Image (cartoon, rainbow, N blue to C red; front, side, top):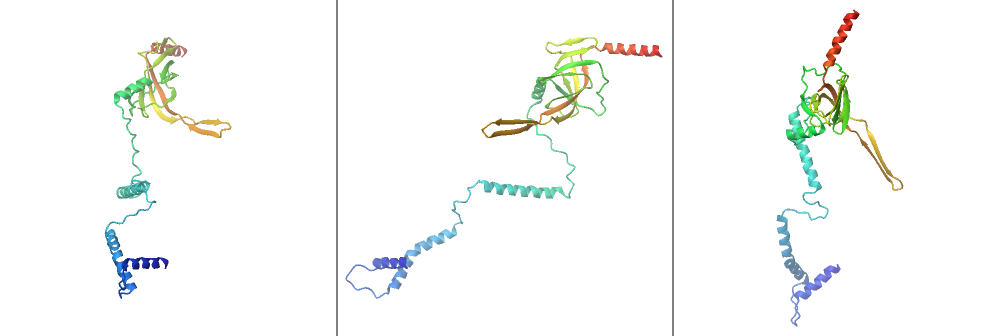
Length: 266
């Protein structure tokens, strides 16, 4: 009511001039209505023009374009499209269970780079093992000391060793360990300086496995600091198939002597 009275006073002062002439006979209510219509006309036109424009929200809580809400909407749309594709291509249940697992992504290295990196570690990949190939031989009293990476192993044919995970090789691949430090047998011993260029050790990759878990625990007393972490080292199991680069004629002589002694005993 107070605002209405103030508005009426302002309108009457504006409409009635300060002159000694008598006031018009038009009632005050009609004057107020006409003045209000003239004042509100431009506002109504502006409101009508705003209605024609698209609706916009100016709330402070609205997220800007490209925010997390938009990302969530995009992700939901992608998931729905992926689900539709699966429904359209999958068919009945169990049809896509026999699919082969996805291949590993390429390492992005050329064949020359792979060979160079493998030779630095101390091996060379020959190729996959054939289905009819039988690389394993009976035991021979010959040993070799080979270096793979930063570790050294004393091996004979038929032995199995665990090394750190070897790159660029799969299960049933044939390898040549070309970093041989020493060869030995009952007849002779050959030591390299530091390696033997003519000696090689052949092996087959049997599996890629994980070592036992090792717990790493860190603590700082009176600091409320404790950290527990586990680690499992990746390993590659190799089976030694043959050792080359040493004279094995004594094995044939031993075989002849054994046959002769068996004949004499009979």
